[in-house]
Image (cartoon, rainbow, N blue to C red; front, side, top):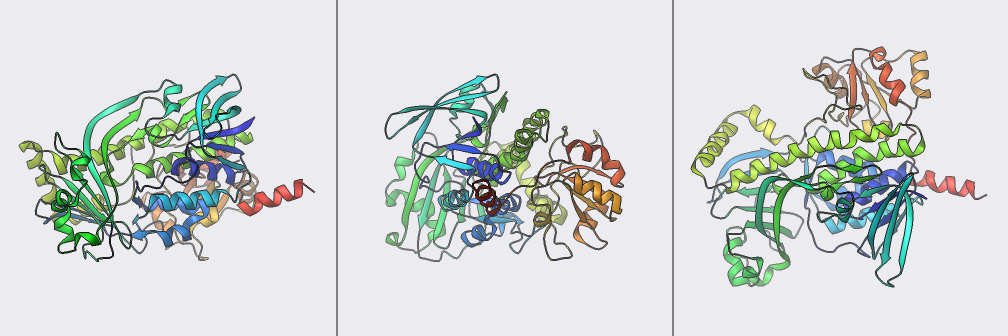
Length: 518
């Protein structure tokens, strides 16, 4: 039996596999494509998502392959600025650019190459999963080799369905998508040019009910446009430059058509949907299989990586016998509410861009006027920080009042020059304003909990004190489980959850295998 089978090796599946491999959990990825899907799709991530990528061991590689951007502007039909929401390019609360552009095929290749470093993970391409059969102690996974036509099956302890918007895994468990009532057809265009178009280095959202549009510079020579299609229009109407040029001319100016190479032109239907259930016994849904969002706030791929980060450490603990299976119930509780919040934000931006109803338009313009004149509102709207996770068995949020529980602990710079994630390294962490006593330190260490001191004047000390807390218990995914005034107030949670083994590096895994083979 394979402990975990992952259906789909896109960014979500590859992230889940890498995280599980870091905990020495054996997993098998089954993917329809033999190699990386070549067309660009997702193009933007925030710093929270880049933090996940860094956790995979790809921080430097992604930084070299990505392009930090300045934020988002909402423009009128004449490209005049209605509101601007800036993002820090030099590093925010997580020590990373608050928004970056990237090429998805390049990221997927990095993820695939990185996964090869872990011998506990196996990627098998050119196969199609044909059936999932739940059994008492596992799941039978049937699949076909598309090259030979041969039929195969494998037994899995758990199955993660990372197989996209048309997910067969979702169908297999009888889950359905709940429509959040936003559906639009858009033309998506990727262009490569050596010409410098000279525009603001951020996301341009054109708020025009007659023809809403999005523009962004994705790479050194790569540019992305998206245009709302009117009823009766299709992408085929714009296959030739004479029809296409009027759409992009406001950005390309006098650049000759022969210097604009179309990399991809396609029609997308933007949807807002969430699965009614994300788990059936031993089968889970992640990424687009569980939720679909309009792209206006750049959270499509990011949401899938958040799913993987949320579930992997819990599943590793259950498989390894250090956590009760009941912790898996928290996955949908925490992630579904967060995904809905981000989808609603995307819908709001989409409505402000496209809705031609007078009342909606006037309200949107009033909101934008306030955003332009009130710095506090501008900072809030421009923040890359996403909502806290919902109350669960692993998020000790009070029913009323403010708390850090459910939020991400900042990836703060520590006194020794390292950042929080470097020290926590995928384990539970106790963050406190006071150093524990020797006995307390020993108890924490024996429970597998890392101690991170938050000295006065430091980033973590300010973070705790702003919430009137002096100590926090942080989960392996960086989420605050609970806060308190001292270590003793967190003791119950430490006893319940402070036994997660540390993740292994690729080098550690190789060493284990060499020793075992002696």
